[in-house]
Amino acid sequence: MVTEVISKKKGIVKKENHFFNSLTFDEVGDDHLYTGLETPMKPTAFDISDDEKQEKIAALFSQIMDVMGLDLTDDSLQGTPKRVAKMYIEEIFSGLNPANKPKVALFDNKYKYNQMLVEKNITFYSNCEHHFVPIIGKAHVAYISSGKVIGLSKLNRIVEYYAKRPQVQERLTNQIAEELKSILETENVAVIIDAKHLCVSSRGVKDDTSSTVTSYFGGVFNTSEKIAELQNTLNY
Ligand SMILES: [Zn+2]
Image (tube, rainbow, N blue to C red):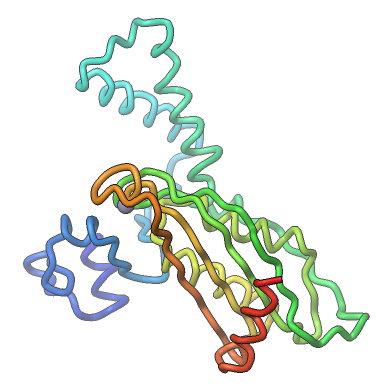
């Protein structure tokens, strides 16, 4: 399945040996390579309900804890498998389920505001899909109205929805941008994300000072003039 998704998006996978750009899947994960816009999901992803998923995850997570040698009869650990399962489905990975996508109402641009609107410093919490540890960052999103405007809090909700998936930062950036373009019916959308990856800071190379910046500049935002204007706005 993973191979299929990669080959569909990039067309550069040697299907027979499961390599991506001649790297093994282990190497893809450690280098956090990005393989496509869509979150790779099985066609059967929603054949079972969220409640059933929680039950299965709780049972499997207790097995992981048991294999690690933890005593699941201890009062402190007993509730952990259920707690983790509930947190996965209802909170930190709730963005995998399209049923949780924010409902967005659009309004007419009655004020005829025709400059860029920037919602900056949207804090989000995501998780790296290669290590399942947190990505913590800020997103800045901007658009120029094509005649419709969106409630400001919906911009935060859209960021949150796509963040609540196992992610890589490039995909998160592009998924937010594509969603905004589709809702607002305009190419004039920009997304900048600056985030810390705990898999880089708390393990592996253990670099606590670096952060990763990704950006999407669509339509008129993809000009040096607009990029400079956006950067100016972000520096206020
Ligand atoms: Zn990672």
